[in-house]
View 1 (cartoon, rainbow, N blue to C red):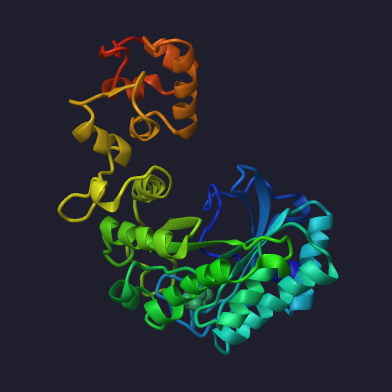
View 2: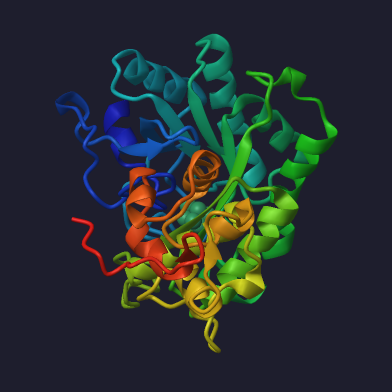
Length: 380
Ligand code: SF4
C-alpha cells in the first residue's frame, strides 16, 4: 500500500489542538487531499498545518468510543519509524505540513509502541535535523526513562486521561488504569521537568504537557471534569486540558449514545481558562447542585452576576485581579485600563471601547468615577 494512502487511514480521532476538528481542514492541497492535516493553534497564537498520524491504527484495547478499537472491522495501517519520518519530511519540504502529531494504537503493550514513537522522533530530530513542531503521545504504561527520552525530542507531550476518575474510565475504556497507567505518567513528566536539566533536549527546553477528556459519553458531570482538570493543572502543571465532546462512532458499544452538545464543551474550556489564567478557584465556578455549568451563560458572567452586580468594580482604583474578574475584560484589557487611568480618569464606556474592551459586557459590573455607566447606550 502506498504510504500516503496509509497515512490517510490513520487519522487521529480526538481532534486534539485543531480549531475545528470535525470540519474539512482548509489546508488540504490537491496532491494530499486525503491526508489527516488540520489547522492547529500554537501557544504563541500562530496557526500551523499539523499532520496527525499514528504509528499504527491497529489496537489491542477496546475503548468504547474509539474507531480504532480492537475487533472493529476496518482497514489498519502500520508504519516503520523510517517510513513515517521520511514521508513526513517529504510533506514538510513540499510545504504541505508544518508540524506533526505522533500518536498510535497499542499492539504488544504501551512500552513497545512508545519505543516506535521515540524512534520516529529520533529520526526526525537526528537524521533529518527537523526543528519544527513535534507533539508526541505518551502511551499508557510507558516507562519513566522512555518518557524522559521522548521529552528530549518533543515540543509537547500528552497523554489522554479520557475520563475524570477511575469509575468513569472503567465505563469508557475498561482496559485503561486511571491512576497507575495514566495520571502517574503525567506526574512523571512534571517530576522530570523539575528535577532534571533540559540541556540534552533538542532546543534546551522541556516540552509542555497536555491531556484530553471525552465529554458526555458516560454521565460524568462538569464538576468531575473541572475538579480533575484543576488537580492536573496544579500537580502536573499541564499547559492545556482539551475537552472533546463525544460523537458516536459506527460499530462501537456507544454508537447509539447521543452526541454531546458543543456548548458544553465550550463552557468547559472557558471554566478551565478561569482556573488556569484568571485566578478562580474550583469553588467559585457556577456549578449547580448536579455539578453542571450553565449552558446559556459563560462562567465568568455567571460569577459576576452573583458577586459584582451589586458591588461593581471601580475601574479607576481597583487592583489588577479585581478588574480581571469583570466580564468583557481580559488580561490585555486590564493592562490597558491601568495604563490609561494613569493619564486620565476613565469616565465613559466610549473610553473603554477605545481601549479594545467589550464595554457592553463590562458595563453592568463596573463604576466609572463612582458612577454606574449608561450601558443601554448603542455601541454600533
Ligand atoms: S488505546 Fe483506546 S483510544 Fe487508543 S487507539 Fe486503542 S482503542 Fe483507541
